[in-house]
Image 1 (cartoon, rainbow, N blue to C red):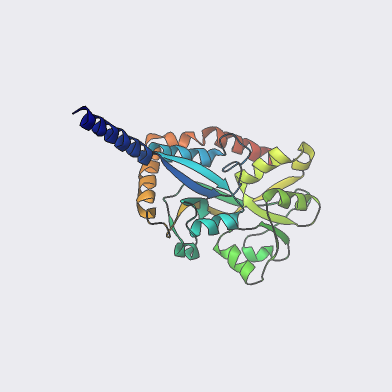
Image 2: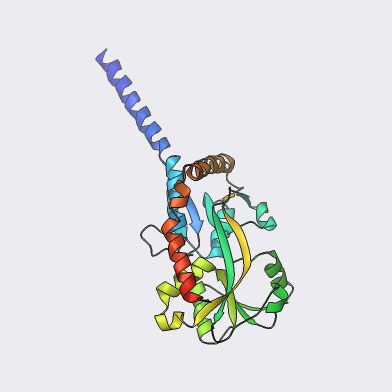
Length: 263
């Protein structure tokens, strides 16, 4: 009798261990370094990294971020090496590889340039006489991307926003597009005060859009995982918890915008 009881207890212990192990889910998300949203140097890895981590935690997942060049993040995720990649604007060609979550972030792209070299533009065609910079793996919206593809814009691609700012200061380019908060963050963190004071941006937005978490179609659990994420993200919005991630960030963004572009 004791022998059977021992066997039963061992079996129960083993089953409990299995259930516990199965309840601990780890997610791999491929991201590009894009401070302040995804920041490899920050303890929390960026404001959007923290948001996604907390949303998934409510669903019982532990997120591990893999910082990669943007193109590599895309292709590794498309091949199913990661559970998702973040964050990306919608583009029709990306639907071949991914399913798009509900919107995660609102972005506003502007054209940065030197204060003593003002630019005027109202359409993408007006940028054709400028030496432009761009970040590898970025999309700047359909109109801009098509103009690049058609050879209508003179653009040189580099690996980071910081390099574009450096090239701007050394007169290698005339201007470059960047998300406004990302640009200000790089100016504050990487540039001296005198360097940052030389830079401004054109007030007309190049692109205002929403960005998304992309789930690869190659993984069999993508639909279920995305549904759980969307439902929990909506709960964060409904409770007001989503907005709290960006409250102090929005204040600092407004202050940096005023300081960089006082007119």
